[in-house]
Amino acid sequence: MRPTFTPRRYLMCPPAHFKVTYSINPWMDPSKPVDLALAVAQWEDLRDRYRALGHTVEELEPRPDLPDMVYAANGATVVDGRVLGAQFAHPQRADEAAVHLEWYRAHGFTEIREPEHINEGEGDFAVTESWLLAGRGFRSSPLSHPEAQEFFGRPVIGLDLVDPRYYHLDTALCALGGDEVMYFPAAFSPGSRAALARLFPDAIIAEESDAAALGLNAVSDGLHVLLPQGAVGLFEPLRERGYEPIGIDLSELLKGGGSVKCCTAELRPA
Ligand code: ARG
Image 1 (cartoon, rainbow, N blue to C red):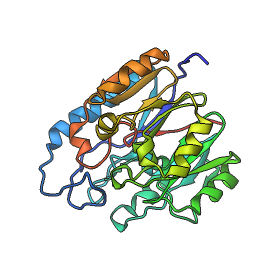
Image 2: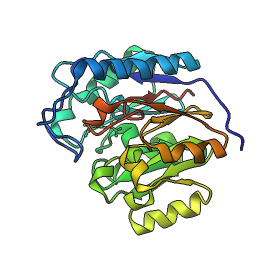
Image 3: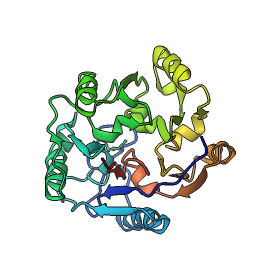
Image 4: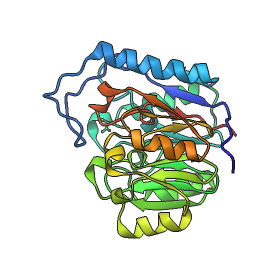
């Protein structure tokens, strides 16, 4: 399939109150200073690039007591206009889930499910044409996978994450378009690696250095792939497949363990 652009609708949350005051993943070091003004400027640059490409970006109001809210991808999963709410693994982020659900209720979404099991939204769910890929091992409960399959009516493929640096699926794998993906095999258990190789024999395989730059934490609109600029090794393989990679500098948000995808929830229409 040739890469094809389709305009998207995204939900983002400005990092007005972003800070690293606790550590719930190996990237977070509360002793390292964060430049808030720079974080805001980098985030605005990402938002403005989406808009310049023709996408709609909605903004969620940040809350001062929820410093990780900038990682809006974790707040829910939206497929076919249906919203599966999140339930966070750590108490520090628990209250984000309700803020997201409230936003969806206020914006005309009617098919909304409050989750029974822990799932961190698109942090652990990735949507391809045929499948809903679902990560487990660090955050989302394996029980959230059948819950998502039942709610969305899409076949779920459960994938075991084994490296704490790649604690969410979206740090280790990116859906590019159709059933095309790029991923970092070492982040997955041997069985999940074998399953990925069967499902995606033509996938772009990321090197360690690109994965460590959070290069897989990328957003594709079917043609443009916005990804951390440090993941230099991914640009050429993407171009070879007809995608247009766009490097993004989110150095400050990397300090919380997230990048482009973490900041971007996609509202997939019915
Ligand atoms: N500090 C946040 C956490 O550990 C980062 C979340 C990143 N988001 C993502 N979609 N991977 O929960």
